Amino acid sequence: MTLYLHGGGFVVGSSQSHYGVVKRLSEASGMPILVPDYRRAPEAVFPAAVDDALAAYRWLISEGYSPDRIRLAGDSAGGYLVAALLCELRRRRLPMPVGALLMSPLFDLNIDRAARTWDPLIPLGFGNACIRAFLGETDASDPRVDVLAADKSGWPPTLIQIGSTEFLLPEAEAMAATFDAAGVPCEVQVWRGQVHVFQTMARVLPVARTALSRGGAFLRDVAGATPRGIVERSA
Image 1 (spheres, rainbow, N blue to C red):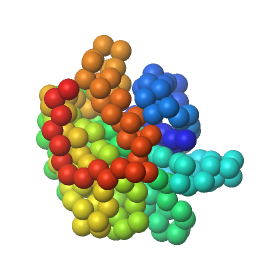
Image 2: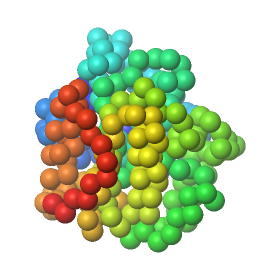
Image 3: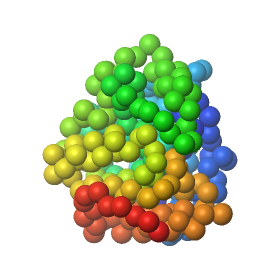
């Protein structure tokens, strides 16, 4: 079973908007996927979405799925929520899932520190506005927010897929370094020439189908996988 947290900048998106990519990922992994409609900003600010992700994880356990049968996945802001959920599980000393797949994940909510530049798909001003809406009155330096600074000890093996044109690429590489420091397997697949969450274009983009196939294989086989390092992909 995979718990999938959808993207949308914390302000849009739903289980319906992500039906296509989730369906393909489910087929590729050979397992069912749960997509909760977590609360979104600006009506609900941090930590509402993280609390909802935690509630969904606990619900799966209550339904008989042991943590060693649960995978996490997410795209964009949903990738951040996956990382925030893992932080919360560690903070509460709850059992970890077996693995995590993150597609074009956002990690750094500190707008000044991130120093992002041009991206072919995401207007910088819009992205920053979404982050501000999500945080509300919570500071980006809050330990519950700063997933980059979190100790990754005990986190599950993780696969990060990201396009080479994205302004989120440097923080994906920085995140992988924190995994390496903790001795946790993490692989960053940098897909050459691809844009933010290119996997959602699988209907028309062969490389997106390839990425989803590899992501699904990782979710299926993660119990025996040891992903590590930064790898450039072209197809």
